[in-house]
Image (cartoon, rainbow, N blue to C red):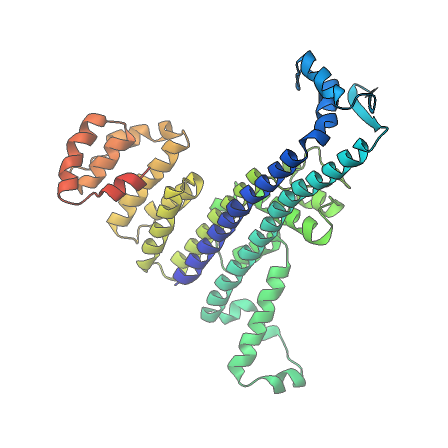
Length: 396
């Protein structure tokens, strides 16, 4: 039902991650080359840091003297201390000041470029999420057009004349309704999904505040130049806006971006799976696509996504036993790599896989670090090709 759009959504987010990973080292290299090409002009900066906080930027006395000699009589470092906050004012009486400011300007642009990379990636992330939600709603309204409330809508004569058929008019009104929904806030989306699609979304509880903040931060970049306003402070939960004030410039770090992608990916995967299960509970293809996506995330060590998807699958009683057993193993695996294995250790120790495929016994041995059993089973499974060398390379 949702196979193609799930794959596209997963691919879009992976493409976004890969783009950031590709551009990041290019920007780092450009910054390093800038520093190496102009290292002499940055000596005043090194001396200034050493003067402000010698314990954090220690320099040997002879090195300081050597560096100062390069600006003999042309550089003055004036220390200031306001309320315990130390600063250093650099003054030049030759062309060294111009060279210093020129290099600092170039480096500032390099740092800003990295900030723009993360900022634009965050905007692209929310756009990918909007596209995915739009696709889900289009699929749902195909089945239940009355849920879109288009019966209450009207068209002008000129609009009707431009339509070819009644179906064209219906699709036009549905498109308008979906645009209206997407123009709302994240909270508006949730209200609509709960009230109209009757989704429970228990998995939202721990994520809603974070997802709301991500959307509000994106709005600041698009509509307010990244400057915090009253709307942001009113919409974002207090624990996520501590020490933030109106007028303050907000940024995006790589850690923040990675976490944002993971949170949205996990939430919208689960949302689509709940809707899929609701609309077509006996559709076995659901396990195939989710297993593929889970394995990709397992391979890339995105343990939180693996945990959520695996937990959903192992509790989906309409799916084949094999799919749920694999999900069980992957769920335990994700907890182990998040250093939470003690939560399920007794459960893993207790389970009996003797009547199942031997691969599950091998996986259990790996999870419990039972090397003796693992290496007793492995040669036989390799010989019968139930396990391949590729499996051993890829499975964490």
